[in-house]
Image (cartoon, rainbow, N blue to C red; front, side, top):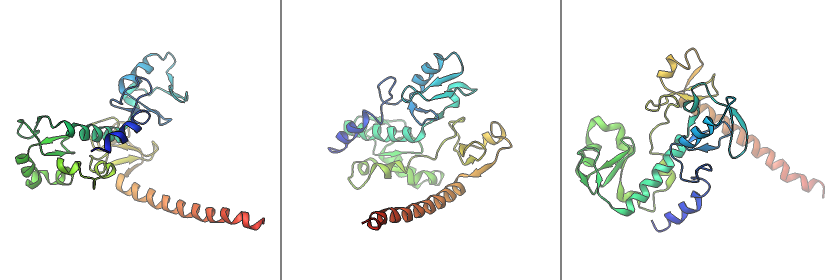
Length: 236
């Protein structure tokens, strides 16, 4: 852990800090320009608007306020996951008593479930990873002692966080993408409401398709790179 905090401190000033409140992001929302702001900070920006548009405080790019206001802007779940991991890693240093999500006792917990988003005591951890009811939780339940091990990277821990959530129905997993709305992640509830009649694509299928396209483009770029490096030799 000695090398973790300086690393986070170096990143925090720009990457994890909201440029409006100058504090760590809280429920980050993302604008079309991809800059992100705290939920409450963006609400303040919206309330100051008189014409249905706002300017990004950073790049000044204008954008229209969605019909449903603040809720219409996408929640940055990737940033939320990273912040959660950082806060979790930092909390481990304190070794304070924490409430077990299963038995509700205040104890020194020994594990964390990324699906439940909470801590587990040693006894409940054993039940959690062996009970068939929590089969889908098992890959996402991590012993706290392993979270301080050097063989675990931030990316590996981030990969254990829950599936992307719907931008409109936060509690619902986004199993589909809407092709009509630029591949926006949507849940099953959306298929009967905001995205009814739209072109819906399975997330797994879309990811495979996009990965194939990306690899093809990278191969093409590699060819052009080889040609560009060869140009100076032709003019010698």
